[in-house]
Amino acid sequence: DSIDSDVDPMERSWPTRQNSRSSVLSEWDIPYEELEIQDLIGAGRFGRVFKGKWHGDVAIKVFNIETDNDLQLASFKTEVSMFRKTRHENLVLFMGACMKLPHLAIVTSLCKGKTLYDTVRDRRETLNMSRIVNIATQIAQGMGYLHAREILHKDLKSKNIFLENGKVVITDFGLFSVTKLIQYGERKDDTLAIPPGWLPYLAPEVITSLRATSQYTDSDLPFSQASDVYAFGTVWYELLVGDLPFKTQPAESIIWQVGKGLRQSPSNVQSRDAKDILMQCWKTQPDKRPQFSDLTQTLDRLPRKRLTRSPSTPLHLSRSAES
Ligand code: ATP
Image (cartoon, rainbow, N blue to C red; front, side, top):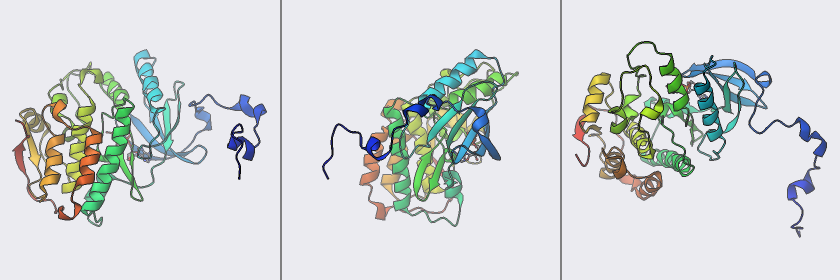
């Protein structure tokens, strides 16, 4: 078939509807009334996530911003404008947002699979090394794309990674600023709230910047591409070992150890190559850590057969590679 290059193939197959243009919404605005909010999926630091309907199944993140606080509102809008730039198969699909107070919400595709957090802890799951490397590669690819778009995740963790029929879907990127502004904005005392399971993903430069203050914003914390890579290291550790580093330790102890350059080593992981990746990502100096593009190549070169994953056994501390 010859194709007339002057005619858009879509226009030939589907009649154009010029007259209906006026009813089309501005690109990312979703009127709150159009959302059908269904069951609560869960509550996080910033608000609640509901299953819902908007032209099909969606996840609706409703933010607890009650406020006439212009800073919070501006921050929300900045985050949303950043979301719009993301189109990658390993990133949750951003569909739009409700931007008018009092209803602030983000609408994304609904992830129907299990989180990586649940997957690595499920004894019935068989995570052989080739699957582990495959999952890690997809995460690195999604993260590499975000960084190429100059977006930092700031909260990469196994609870923010879904697995759907073998495909990795990363969620919650860039939402950290909103969540932290809200959380710390609301605090009246001088204590620092540390959400459970947060510290193991925090790079040493971020951990050592934590301060007990009620005036906290994320601009006080030195997040960077390298701190996202550190968090990826922790996810890699979870994939290999099936649990978080420093699992049973109190926050003070984790902060002290990581600040001193101590890391938990997966002593029961046989493969030197797998441990090397971990130690590279967990380096103390941010500029010594690899980039996600390097990591996808390293993962691709891993001799998968020689790698083994053993059930979790007592772990030992090791110093990070250069300290
Ligand atoms: P935190 O606030 O510390 O990040 P969290 O990740 O558990 O904690 P949320 O991100 O608010 O909190 O998520 C709340 C719940 O909604 C979690 O169970 C999460 O797995 C689920 N969830 C989030 N996004 C989606 C999505 N797009 N599809 C399906 N479930 C989702």
